Length: 312
Image 1 (tube, helix red, strand yellow):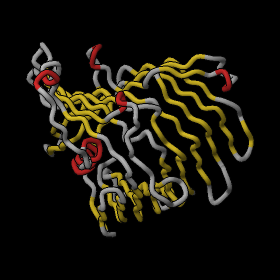
Image 2: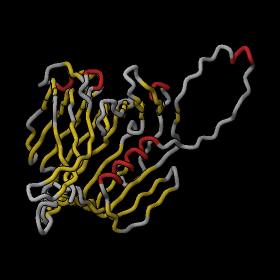
Image 3: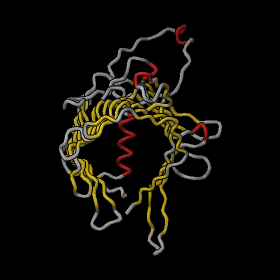
Image 4: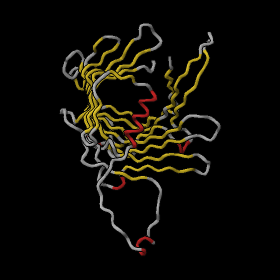
């Protein structure tokens, strides 16, 4: 699968007053990652009153480096005519398309990125260097605590409209942790660790306008889950699902490299390794209106998952 993609649509950011006009836009992997980092790390200007403190109070403060920011009274609604991805190994290209795409509150209104009042969930950015000499960026992110709904009105595969997709009330239970590091072994690339606990009210795939062809309800992604797998009322969730494990020298990785084909043609590709660990529970799975009951996948431990995204 290649990395060619197109997007056309609009982005309304009510809290920040940003509007991207509709049109046809090319999305490259570099641009997509840049947008993700921007959304995750952009601070919001807040109104606050500064107050002078005395010398005695100042002497009791231990200063720390880093940035803490909170977001309040925010509103976002994102729409796009289509997101399209092509297989560059074929001529003509085959496409996977998500048409009439939107992110909102599920009713066509704004969703929120407001920061929870709990100070443990404040957004923070810190930079530190370990004893090994590796410098890392540590981010605590609470941008996904408020629910939002993802909808693709039409999922099109190789020109065939297969129906609609909806991810309803996606949210994280608490703030997420993201660590981004360089390397000191002489190689280039990025090491990552991401921890999150997610709840999704439902995942629905509607085939050819038939109601609820496939529906999964109350999806939980966490570190561990206890309780009888057949009895969702007894389930208890703990910790965050983990992608990458830096403490055990198995981070998620992102690398870019060029190799030479047999005919001498150089091909540059992006390479990803995505190890993961945790638990997935789904309270109900229904197909065509028939309920097949709950689903439990515990003790997930993927040591290595390699993905290559070739260039042109």
